Length: 357
Ligand SMILES: Nc1ncnc2c1ncn2[C@@H]1O[C@H](COP(=O)(O)OP(=O)(O)OP(=O)(O)O)[C@@H](O)[C@H]1O
Ligand SMILES: [Mg+2]
Image 1: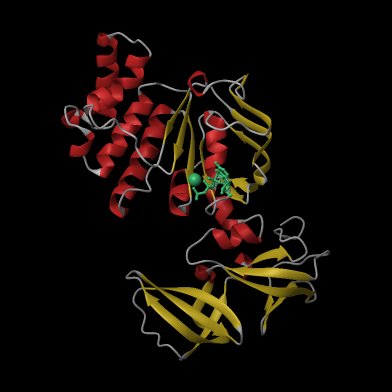
Image 2: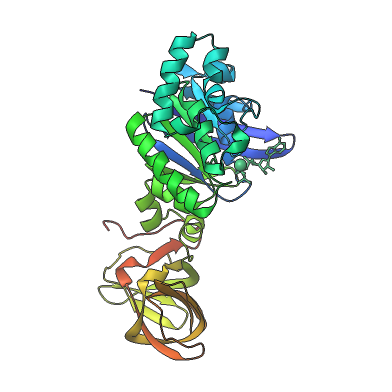
């Protein structure tokens, strides 16, 4: 059982501070995604764990060992990169077995390991081919196979699916989930694709400018984003965010946002005055309700239609089922799922909920 711990880990490149100070505990057997916009420090974090970068300060533990001063080969990890880096002159079988050969594993034992991994990744028919004769997804499986034969305690994957087309990505996503389920090994997965992070992870670490914003299971990240950044970053189409204020409506809380006064189904004794109000597209109910908005944009996607609305200066996005007959410029009535409105304290951007909710 192998836990991964970052403790006060920082990393600067010259004057550029990539990671100011990271504390993160990844439990044994977890599938954790590091998610965030380009340049937020995902790869740097993974590369420090792999031993490809030296932290400027802090400690990193894999299991019960502090690995900061250990060479990559001594860390009991295997890493899969975005570019598969297969050896072009070697066959698939030779590529997969290479780490074992380098380690001096006997030929007969290599063959046993190869057969196991090839069966797991369905690579048997491809073993005699060279990488140039494989599709992107097949090459990706070979790269995974090469990591698997080493039987590391921790797998590190840096955007391993980003070179694949959409359908192959979906397929490999499912395969990775299954692989993790079967192996039960700790996996740390870097991606800027929130769908990958949401579908595969036990927990997601959302990063921004080298700082951890929230570390929680996917449903919590989605349903209870810890701050305005996470709220706006997670979810497609994005949550509408607008300035608002809170008032007491006599036993329940009232949110004032744009021209709307929305009575919430709960009360609060103490509350911030100024808030950022977040409303997800699926919580805007078009058709009936106490408010009116003008349709600004209609985007049919097939099974649903994304509609941009202007409610007296308040910009909202709604998802409407099916191909809808809404027209740009028309006025529609709408309601909100009031219990699902997100509130963030304007002074620090953090999620705010009344005590006991
Ligand atoms: N070798 C380097 N020298 C100088 N700065 C670097 C180096 N590597 C990374 N950085 C900087 O550190 C920060 C974090 O980079 P990192 O590669 O970890 O981001 P990332 O989250 O993986 O981004 P992406 O999604 O684009 O891969 C960035 O500002 C980047 O420019
Ligand atoms: Mg990166």
